[in-house]
Length: 90
Image (cartoon, rainbow, N blue to C red):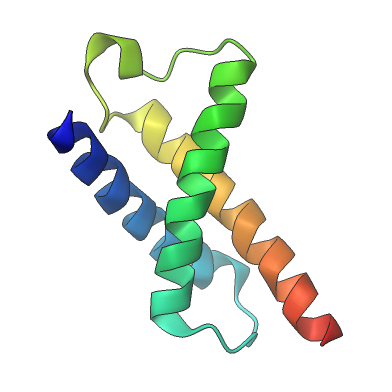
């Protein structure tokens, strides 16, 4: 159980870093902000994909597979993009 949580945190951190590179822009979050948003985005992306009924390997105990990485990165990109829109309005 604790290994799963650590794996999701690491996966979210990597996804957030990649999302920060892919989305670009200067919303003033920095690397740490993108990593934090990546963790949130990975959780949100995993929840949405799970709610839609797709299998990302979590049921098999395989957290770090290609499907979960793609889901985490997409969730992180969406989260970083939304955060950048919100930060630009301020």
